[in-house]
Length: 393
Image (tube, rainbow, N blue to C red; front, side, top):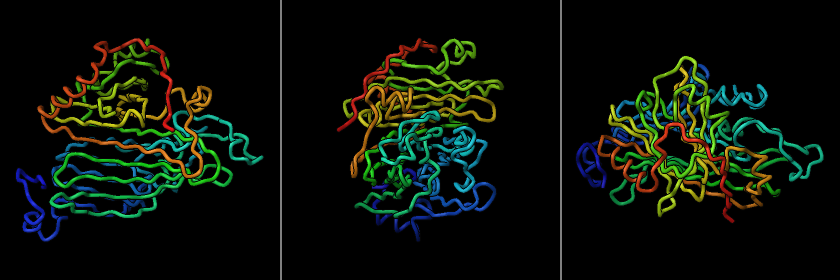
């Protein structure tokens, strides 16, 4: 059954009330036409519940806009959504990624995440490529998808909005990794479901790293908004914890925009529930609005929290990851790099859920607290304990 506008309706009853489902819900293919966005293909999803979001086909089918009843949840940076042809992957000593960084969800990987690094490349068997130069957060987020389908599918009296595509990160004498992505949302629903599979399409043993950079912005993100997560241990804080105290901004509560803010990043060790799920939420009690991100601990065992409260940026990121924040070389040294042989793959599942109203916020907070209670100290001392990662066989 479909829940719409206070009514529970069958498929027939929905059809009786409109000439087309697109009157209040559906998936629509569009193309942006101006400025740096010109030429980007986009899918707009509307569930009929007040949830609207867009997926940028030419940005790895990443989620760009996200809003609920007209209130923005997804973050837009000053860069806008740049067409991939304008992106300089190798520029600025590997940090030009920041010139194209925007949106609710930006995928990072597929063979590297985190800061620019030079890593061994001898696994590719090409004498001219003994090392590989990686840029910030990898390449996949600026690769256009090959759209394999989209639309609305009825399953009995339930209607699912969906899109699928393939993103190919490939090079001669290098990696040949394919990301197969499916996005789903139910008509009348409040959640976005992401199902990803990363496959080694090549015939050389290839490293794999992956994370979701999920970025929320104003008005969900505002002074007094809260970060709620099942944290067992605060593992790491970028640079040093003393600077965080000097900025007077901890990990739990969001401040107003700051004119001189320097970004803060944490790594938290999360606890999963009995279903292997790790739910993390940003909650705005004043608005009665929250946003919950749920991933699987066995798939994405590490989680970072990114804070950029600089005026004109004003964002916070929830970042479930395959690897510790120490990066590519450390993963190799610790024996924690994921290596994919030909045809091998890794799967990732994420659910983004809107929390509508005080009762939904309270229920989410209760679920999270039942798994683990996060530290009450705004500035917990990082333990430095990076747990050993057991990659799935």
